[in-house]
Image (cartoon, rainbow, N blue to C red; front, side):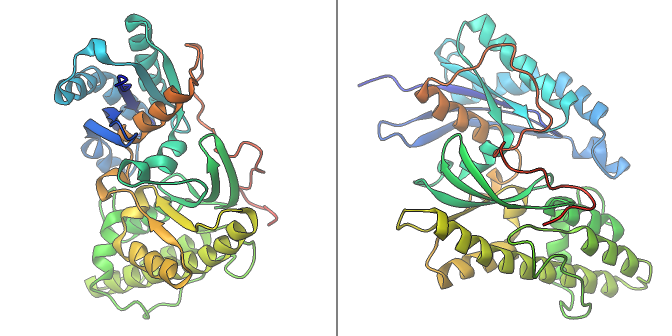
Length: 357
């Protein structure tokens, strides 16, 4: 019986300092031995958003302890670690540099392989932590920094089908929450407020709803919320805006996902239709419910990561490290931090004003 690799994963791309130890069983199913995440919400909430310099300082202060706790909780000896996988991008460069430097130093000291990981690939593969996920599949990645539809052919092989041309969906949720007077990070609270409101009270815009394929846009929706927020008089007004916003997002994602289904079916030669939803916004229960129903109507198998693994974490980084370790895909210690690092590096950059779609 061959010894299975044990991977240390490190994540510090934004405002979570995280470390995880994973391995796999004899059938090749990943096993999470530990997964430690330290949030910085209390540091940033008074500023209404993440302050990069404060985030980096917090990473520096905590990373030694976080990694040590991940090792201790996994009940392994440090000498048993086969490789280190660190997030190298995309993200805030001052934050990325902390975890990346620590991972390189650890690998060098222990004389084990170092693996640089694309944070988005961590999200893309995260459902493998709780399901038997086969390639190819259609991925909807919705988080605070990214919103994309991707054709996932294999590890290291991604084709972007659609992307946001302005704000990411998670960013739209957080900015809407801020306009409604909800403390950062307020995005997850929108869903709770929406339960108390009338989703039909306000008709909100759906930018590029009937054009642009499965590309997305949320900036116009955010502007509409800004205008409405100036006329808020009661708590019920907030509930109604939140409910209308939630409903509009669901309608946009439903329409764009239907388009993405057709694009995926044109590209895939597999008879299997698999739809994976990952990223922080995948934890939104109403969006989950709507997409699950849509999959049932279109004969797609739907796969979501566990709620606790939708946000940023190091287990998904360690998982990518595990997959690359088995393929012998290691990196040199001079691999740079990449604040911009698309999964589909051949795809045209669409973000910004004046974009033609």
